[in-house]
Length: 93
Image (cartoon, rainbow, N blue to C red):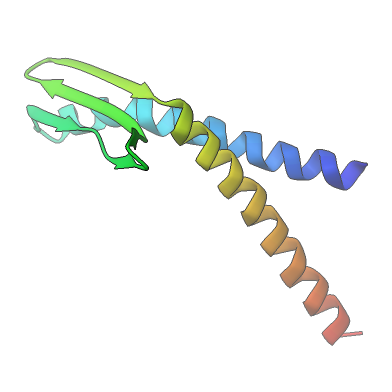
């Protein structure tokens, strides 16, 4: 039960990190003197995120597909790390 909670927590953390990065990236781009950007990468015909920067106006959206994929990536990342740690523990026992 505790392991399941840790896996889900890791996935949710990656989802929150994804949303934070999507919402903060237009500000970073403005500080780097980019003034016209329209980014909307798609997978399976659905956008991962939407970032629009025009002069001093900007907007960013974290889409549902992006959040779901980042949560799944967080779950996978946690499970891979735990697998590697268990292999190392077995090797050095």
